[in-house]
Length: 460
Image 1 (cartoon, rainbow, N blue to C red):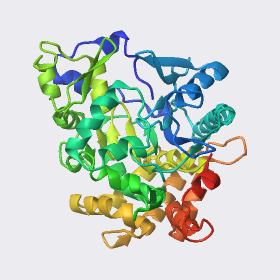
Image 2 (image 1 turned 180 degrees about the vertical axis):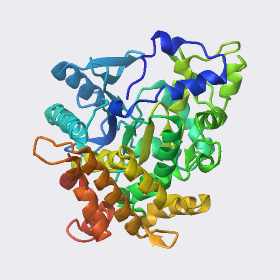
Image 3 (image 1 turned 120 degrees about the horizontal axis):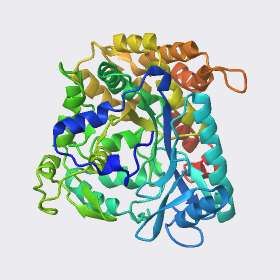
């Protein structure tokens, strides 16, 4: 789901009016024939002998992983102040990047089918395992790091993170946990019009906690159960209320691109990137930037790239850019990295399924949605909304998605349709047991209360 490169004429275009910000998002509209699927997923690298997190530098390091992938598989290195911080696909359609604590992220290419995005995930994991095995580095798919303290977690050499972390401390208790100790899987999906965007945004915001429950996979912190099924989701409840949450305004009359732009303009800035340097503008207003009134850069006005950067620093449960990002799921085993795009493609890319999902949630109030969001991190499928368990709602949601995927009639190499990627989620919904509860049972039984066993039993 890549946009223009930072040095392209489009990215350098000056912003002189709010209309340009609205148009920037509206340019994401695509006819149904051009709708694509972009999957992103993060994982924790670890040293296989010590189970320590992987440092940025050294013979067994994040840097060595990136350089190894670059040399072996033809990725292009992306550098910041001399440090390799990412890899770009030479075609420009995908990338590998680093989250603040070294979480290794694939930002996938925009692909036409769930089969293709699943093949992409498989190929990526095969590549990182090949390089990782030679370095004694493994990868763990969990929603939060299970044993490392914040102090033990490395910090990646990216300028934006040096600005974000101290600002996070001013806004909530868990900002640094979010940055350094969580991992997610996301899917980015398209819309055809403003009305289509609004309906998809509303449906996905309401149902995001249901996805959180189905993918709950982060019950441990610093070697012990933390009391949550999805600690990653709980962290977001106390990170930064200015830029996260369930966006109740999205359900109000008059919702559209401009209303989201107004919201984004009111989210405080983090930084401005100029000439390879990140200028700390944390807490400042993008509106003031448009007027040339940033104290740090007096007279400077934003470009479209600045607007694009700002949109990436907003973290609601569903984020609008030139597409919609589903942000509610913990990362997990390989099969779940394919299940998340399947779940949302089935809902979003079939009109009957989308209409059915709206019927499911349209009577939920803002208070209903917020209470559900707050309950799910602890209760997962046992939480309730409007008198129904999340388990029951999840079954309904999965049935809609399965029907939607079936209507696409896209067959993969094994002769099966995209519906096969929902099988694992159907099992979870039917049993009412999340992966987090399975991990907790192992902790209490065969693991003998040793969380470190998760690295042996659940590494990629």
